[in-house]
Amino acid sequence: MRSHSIIAGLPLLLVGRTSAFYLPGVAPYEYAQDEKVEIKVNKLSSTKTQLPYDYYTLPFCKPDTVHNSVENLGEVLHGSVIQNSAYEEDYRVHLIMDNLPAATKMIREMPNGNTITMYDRGYPLGFVGSAERPGTTPGTPYMYNHLRFVVKFHKEDSFSGSRIVGFEVEPLSVKHQYKGSFTTDMSKLNLLTVPVGPDLPPQPVGVVKADATPSASDMELIYTYDTKWEFSDIRWASRWDLYLYMGDDQIHWFSIINSLAIVLLLTGIVAMIMMRTLRRDFNRYNEQDKEDLQEESGWKLVHADVFRPPPNAILLCSSLGMGMQLLVMSTIAIFCAMLGFLSPANRGGLLTAVLLLFVLMGVPAGYYAANTYKSLKGTEWKTTTVLTATLFPGIMAGIFFVLNFFIWSQGSSGAIPFTTMFILLLMWFGISVPLVFLGAFFGFKAKLKDNPVRTNEIPRQIPSQAWYMSGTFNVLMGGILPFGAIFIELFFIMTSVWLQRFYYVFGFLALVLLILVITCAEISIVLCYFQLCNEDYHWWWRSFLTAGSSGLYLFAYSIMYFFTQLDIIGFVPTLIYFTYMFVFAMLFFLITGTIGFYAYHLFVWVIYGAIKVD
Image (tube, rainbow, N blue to C red; front, side, top):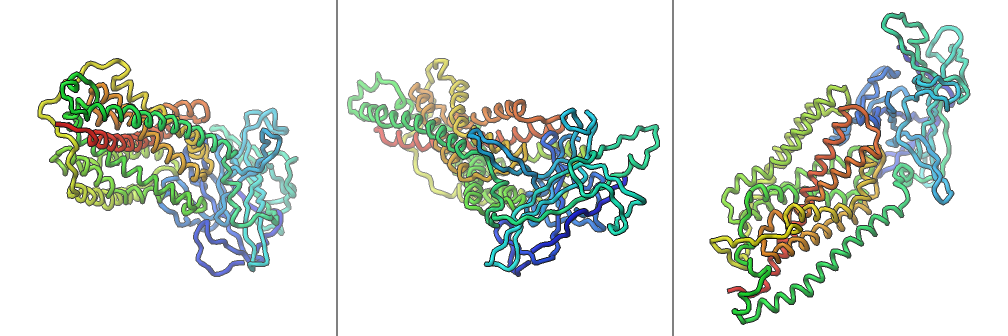
């Protein structure tokens, strides 16, 4: 197929540059009159396949020299390949001008009758003919081969040039006709379909049979574009607002109120336990009448076993170390994004920051894993440290390595290059692992306080438990409320990831994270306190799994989301979705489990340090 590209319409008249350091999303870029504005191509993406492709994998018109723009690590992992430009399955084309992504304008009507203008990133590659589209044949694919660029600029007396504040694309499909022979020289080309309008016949994509000789019309596809300049009252600082629109803020506030209701419920239960039940227990247990005490039952009677080391202590401590690494990483990343340091104009910046923070947070991972293992009188500190540094990162690396082969087999730009894999391995073994060992060194060297109660040599027999106090039932019940605290905001996050929308309400996300921490802490305290009251002192793993089971509900929700909100087709795209959601659920499990464990560990220290024991 021969692809021709010509310019139809207005010349590129623009507005000047001042000499200054440019930080994406922070410093404006000013154009002078008649200065050239470059449009860059990014990628082809689809919500149905989740497989991005390089723009030039299709026979678009190319400039004489194609060069890649500088990419950060996050862009590479996203499959974004940004290149210069001459200008199946719901694929959208992504272009960039002045660091603004191209967008198609949509007018949506709100429930109150008002209308709002929203942007959808990129523009569709084409469409399939239907009875609702006049002039098309149902089932025949058509190509958008004419692009109308609507460039909005803002100018004030306070600066010399003009600033681009909007980049819209209106795609049109038109079967171009010309008289004579084709030439890219506009002074000699007699194009009969200019000016381009929606009333012209659309451009079908010719399908040539294997045993047929293609005709000139089957092989020729002419691409054109025109440019429209519009003055806008939008200031440069607000030009991303339409891209970042996440729906009515009332929905996010409803999420916060819903989460706060859960927190208040749990706080009331914890307050009742602390102020009534525990105070009564303290008064009773601290009485000097030993004869009456022997007939009592409750959490004091397991004081000699409550700090007995759990089974598989190394695995527990390495999981806690990884959970702490993820928790600190998430907190710092959300805080920086909330302050605006991770602008959406810096494509891939958030993912790059998350990766860097993850490897740098190896110190708290090693410290907490080693310090907790030391408190359990463990001696295999080297094994614990190595497992903390390699177990879960190794699982994730193995999963993504195998998945990468499936993506690579589809020819997608989403496949991670082997050079990038090598860089990630260097970051892991060259930065993260040494920092975990450094943190473990300080964790083992840190002085520990003596346990508030002594541990007997012989473990106490645990009485039979009611069915509702069984480990499995309590663990599964414990994950419901932490998941309920975040599931509304989770919907927006998953929509931004899988439906390729922007997510930028990090202030709400920070509040949700705070509520999640409180919820995980309180649910572990409540359920594991009831466990101790029934003289079951195996709380170590229970406190971790109780809050961590919210990861199971997250993965179950992702299954429901797949069938109700997405239209993904094909084996590889489905594999991509469930693999990513499984990894995300596993990481969420580690974070919430770690919060629950350390909250209950502190609770146990407090209550057993407040009673008198012989």
